[in-house]
Length: 224
Image (cartoon, rainbow, N blue to C red):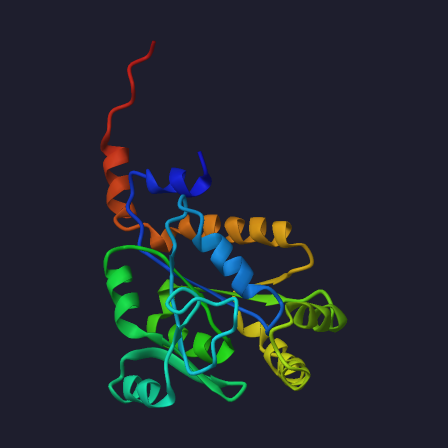
């Protein structure tokens, strides 16, 4: 049985958490986020952002992002229907507020694939329920190779992403955890270890004090 399934059978209920992964474009956050979200034993609900960016050929509307125009995005922002939003590479990205609030109210975990600007906003609003992870590339040369292999951006866009990557990497110290994604399988296992540890934090165990009090009130088992 997977660790996530074992944790779900705990006699002490647990508060949900928001797991945020950030990285410069091409460092692997989206691949890792979706791999973790697709593991049913963890029960993570993927937060689908809205964006004004044009859809790439490999992307599915409503699964990778919800692709909307600028007017629709600005309407969401004006109604305060976004938990966070940012302008990145000339496009708007944001997280709809209501799906997140519904999931957390039901005690479910959510996983976010957002940048450092969005992370700051979510942490400011949800604070104790947020766990943040920054993913670094093994080198800038490898980051360029990954962006070029993706073959979905123009040369001009790749150069802009590489320039912005340095600004994003400078924010690494704002995160709870930092990992270097030089091997996808190893990085995935590290993410699972982090999630396991965060599930077990004392502060997340609802009613743990009452459980321990009841435990201590029980008589010892009779000697064999």
